[in-house]
Length: 205
Image 1 (cartoon, rainbow, N blue to C red):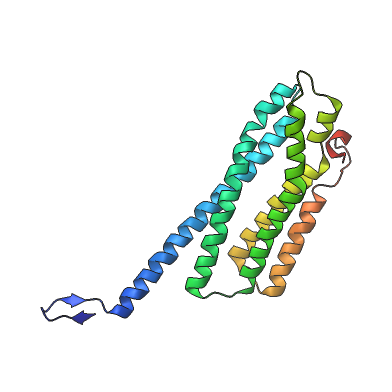
Image 2: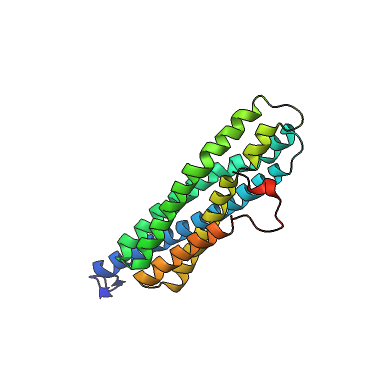
């Protein structure tokens, strides 16, 4: 604090700059949290719509139940972009170079790769099939809806997202961070494997 020529207290330039940096960091953190909430909402909507579509009896029901998944596909990328941009901004402002941050961002990229490689082509194929489908489900549309790779993608992304939350909470070192993501990948794969008593139709490739 300084006293100006009129006898009033003023904030020095150094403190003023620090306050601006903290305000920017707080805004970036808020965007980061909102982005994370949006991303989990998108995952939940996608899971619910695909699960309900699998239990549809007609193509019209599939169209109706996949509508929320369309909204989720819009919300998901926007939320992911918000998470990445705000995260990089916070890292730059706070000059953070922790190992868990780098591993967490790598896990986010892996989630995007999984979605593009496994989910996007199969959702597109379902959309194309629905353009000509009417009435009861055909065997081809039924097979597309029960494609095991759709659920591998879904469960893998949820598992990775939970792993990222663990990293953000515990903030382990490099080895601990790599182990966390490795365990998340293994859990995602294991939860997608056929289990005794599970409907064989639900796990066909």
